[in-house]
Length: 369
Picture 1 (cartoon, one colour):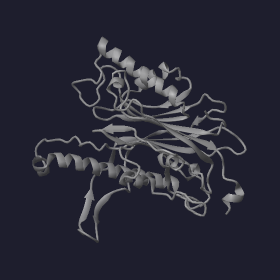
Picture 2 (cartoon, helix red, strand yellow):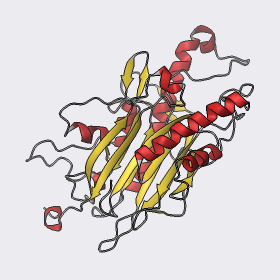
Picture 3 (tube, helix red, strand yellow):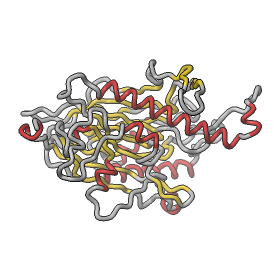
Picture 4 (cartoon, helix red, strand yellow):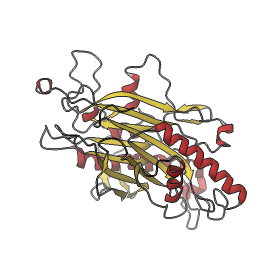
């Protein structure tokens, strides 16, 4: 669908615990798909469905969540006939309960997108992102220490560059994330057991989940600050964050990650001319030009939620002085979500998000205003 070799499209795809037959996910004693004739048939259905979605997405850059075995992702790309068209950044899960994120960058179009060296995973929070005896001075005025120091699923970072000359497109830094879910945390009840697990086990597990997700969001924002903030106000630092962030667009966690940039909604507004650290939600960009808005990627207890997101820096925002790409459209593929008959055919439980950006640098005479 891209028209210019500098155009870019991004997609995020939760793979719904993609694992090879016999491989473990959350239970060491019970593989997600048994290595039996019936299990292998189930795996083939899941691979076929996943492959069909890859063809449907047709995106330059795809971020994945809930991958347990690299081979399973390779199998899906082979089934789609795309294994030679993409560079894959993927790895096996290191153990029970530790799914990984992954990335695919297309290399088959004219000009070819280029995955630059150095892609990898960050498991630990930045060294200086620590809450050690932080004292509040209003309200409760308590001292706060939080010892969490790692992401529940390591964040993947990579750099991508589209081909093209005069001018050559800037390098785009991509992050793929899968933050802690809103579901109750899995905790140990081994002795000595904390008193809260005796008195309020369900509350404790739920609260821990939310605390961890907020800390992960804050740590990711700290990582972004190091990449996006520059003493040179004219410097470029295109960034895209995508993945299953496990919260809505206006949630505390997502607004922490985005740094809440201004959106320009009226002609005389100056909002969005500059947002050195801000990330713009593709969902909201689509809302601003939609006659009707129905956006959901997950259904839980009959509640339609948007958990899967693509966030982009000011280099992708239409009204920014630093614009190099402009927003074309965002699409959600969610017909299968909540339908048990589709899950029987190997479908996932999250909607897929895809967004397009056209190469369209801001004219110099406007950028200088």
